[in-house]
Length: 259
Image (tube, rainbow, N blue to C red; front, side, top):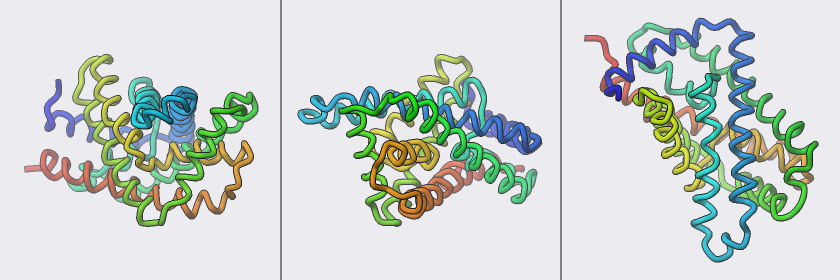
């Protein structure tokens, strides 16, 4: 496996490459990443949300099932290649610390990727899921509504802190994936932290671009304004802090500084 210093070297090269992409390539890769994360969310609803009997007796088991099935999204992003906003929150930071990339390039990438992720996630929510009635009946629709209502019922601060926890673990999953040298190792390294953040109920902004719009499309009494203000904004800000500070800055400072 690659040691932390070698992982930083890989991260730095990837960040330079990502920063050099044309806008249309970044948007297409971001659309794919949003769709991949949404597929993970859909699988989690079918497996975890489709087990109400287990939830009634052993709620921890259903949380684990939900978390255990969700990581397919990030695994696809890393293994086949795509642009995910939350992972990119950490990628660029070691280069910024060493002045190899400017803040402007980072913000441009984040903006394009965030927009592309949103389009991809909503596409899967509406076209792939809503129009096909995959979650239209109980118990799946009950899970869809419960998830969305729960995610829009917290205070700004609670959602913000949960956003920090989510992307701290997501970026660690990406880091671990780069430490592994074979596909099996990458899958297992990514799966563990992502499973953990989902099972613990943290807030991932890109996943929520699927979960909450899906509930809106299915008829939940949640408005787009509520989605954005009560969840998307605080979750996104928390994700940025979790990725930038607790992974990008820490590991960039500890292992990526130029001597």
